[in-house]
Length: 288
Image (cartoon, rainbow, N blue to C red):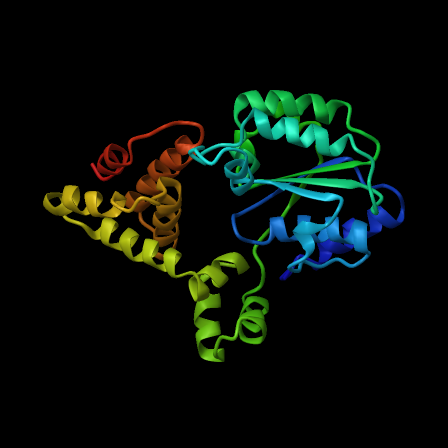
C-alpha cells in the first residue's frame, strides 16, 4: 500500500491531467518512506487509472522495475552490490518500445545510487533524448551518488516522513497488528512505513538489529569473535547489516561520539556500492 504522500500524488495526477508529466523524475528522501511505492502507483495509474500498489502492479505490461533482484535475475552469480551496464541495455530496450495499454512505458530504477559510473554515463544519453512515450523514475536515498549531469536533467521530488498516526493505523488495519504493538512499532519507525513493516513482520531484519546492538555494545576483546559470528551466514550482506547499525544508532540518545561514529558508518555504507570489500576487516576497522 501507499501510506501518506497525498500531496505528491495529487500533484502527479494534476500533471497527468494537464498533459504536463515529464519524461523523467528523481524520487529522493529517506529510505523506506514510500518512494518506490509511489513510483509503482504512478505506473499503475498511467495504465489502469487507479493510483495504487497491489500484487499485480509489477506485472503490468508497460511497467518495469530495475533493482538488485532484477540484476540477480540477469546473472545468478552476480554479487548484487551494484546495478551495471547490462541494466541500462534493458532500460533502453524497454523504453524504446511503444506502450501496449498505457500512455507511457514506465521504467523505475530502485536504489539508483547503486548504478555504476559506467551505467550512469549510459543512462545519461537516455535522459538527454528520451522517447516521447517513456517515463523514467530514479528512486534513491542518496542523490550525491548520482552524476550531477543526470540530476540536472531530471526534476526532483522529495519524500519526507509519514505521520506516526498514519503508520499506526495502517499497521493495525492492514498488518494485522494489535493496536498497542502497532503504536510501538510506529513510534520506532521514525516516519518510515517500510521500517514499521520490517519491524513488525521481517524476522531477518529484527535479527540484524539484535546483532547490530550487540556489535555496538561489544568490548574490544570480544569484538573479533563477534564479527566472525555476524558474517558467518552464507547470505550475509554487509550493506544490510550496516543499515541495521545505522538504524540502531538513530534510536539512541545523540552525542558527539555517536555522531562521529554515525558518519563513519555512513561512509562505509556508501563505499559498499561497487566495491568488493572484506566484511570482517571493514567491521573490525569500524569499531577501532
